[in-house]
Amino acid sequence: MLARVYDFLVKWIATPLAVVAITIGAVILMISAGNPNLAETGKKILWAAIIGLVLVFCSWLIINAILSALGFNMGTWWNPNLVCETDCVVPSSDKKSDKK
Image (cartoon, rainbow, N blue to C red; front, side):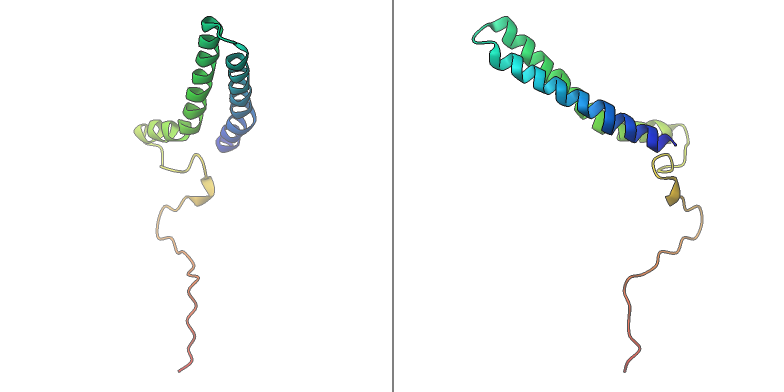
């Protein structure tokens, strides 16, 4: 459930908003035509959007660090199907023939 909420927020809300902000900042920077105030506004919008996008993509690391500090089992919030508490057997893809 938490993984679906996270995926929705990152893929469908934060990323498109960052792309729109980067586009707006670039357009403002291009139409500034030598106006230093308008160019500075465009640069601020671009940097804010890029920093926000980096924070969004690094949020997985931030969430993992916080949950690990709280004692949550590492990795289970983002992929609950991979929880392996005790002896886990991973099937081997290496097939050896018994021919002699």
